[in-house]
Image (cartoon, rainbow, N blue to C red; front, side, top):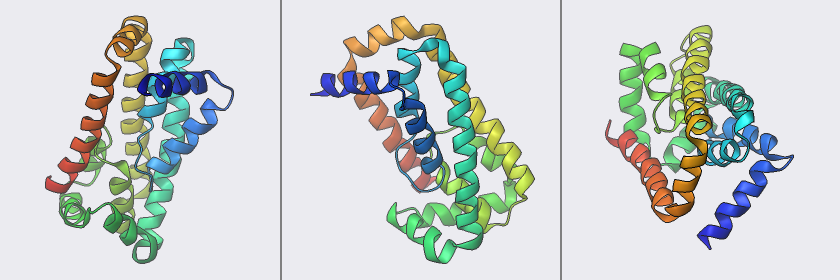
Length: 192
């Protein structure tokens, strides 16, 4: 079953709608959706390595635009939308700690957290709640999200065929590792 799912994702990654789905997931992940866009970047770049920079650009742009949406949720709609999102994911204590750190470190928090598997939606919503300078937020988001997605795309472009062979041979282990990384990000958010 895992092999069929992997093959299906690779076929979708080669399809004409893949970039639209990537943009939608990247946008949503920055403001409310739990699945990171890496789930689309990896198979898309492996399927079409010549499009690595385009894929990273789409992902970065959609993620930054989604970040503005998350910022707006925090700034204008925290009580009605932002707080339920934080509660839904069980992030209240992490969110409180993050806000305290954010008041002290601001820009550095955005730059550091934007590169980690910690959900970026917490960064964007907290930035809005803190009424953080929107231009600095935008610049930090472009820098950190761009660095992350272009790094992933570059590694896949450079090491694509051997990496693809490794993934296909050890698909179960790679999938388990990816899931553990995502869970680790959520756990780190709760205790960091």
